[in-house]
Amino acid sequence: MTTERLARAAADAMWAQDKASRALGMAITEIAPGEATLTMPVSEQMVNGHGLCHGGYIFTLADSAFAFACNSHNQRAVAQHCAITFLAPGRLGDVLTARCREMSRAERSGVYDVTVTRQDGEVIAEFRGLSRTVKGTLVLETGV
Image (tube, rainbow, N blue to C red; front, side, top):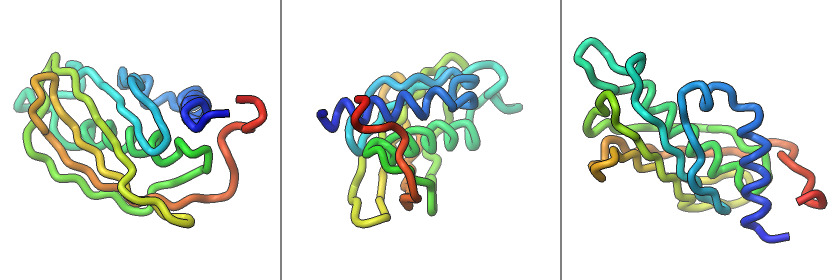
């Protein structure tokens, strides 16, 4: 079994239970060991009184990419710490992309960076997440 197939199987298992991400219109566009890319369209209910998408929805997209990346090794992982810097807003109709990469992983801890961009390529947020593995796996490796 390849690590790529295992990462996809773990993501599929998580996605099946992730009603919140699906309700927000997120989609997983890429998954690999230690990496995940998700997209999310900015809809009317996501913009604030200034007509901008800023804050919580962008954090949620980045956090979801982080979750899929840190669970891609088929070891259950949870967030230990997250920090985000907002650089620019999203706008109604934008499609936001969150790309997460594993920066380091040792024993039970991992460090992951997420860059959130608009479709024009402008970086609108930078996120760093620290993960901690807990007991269990997402899928049986023999079935992948």
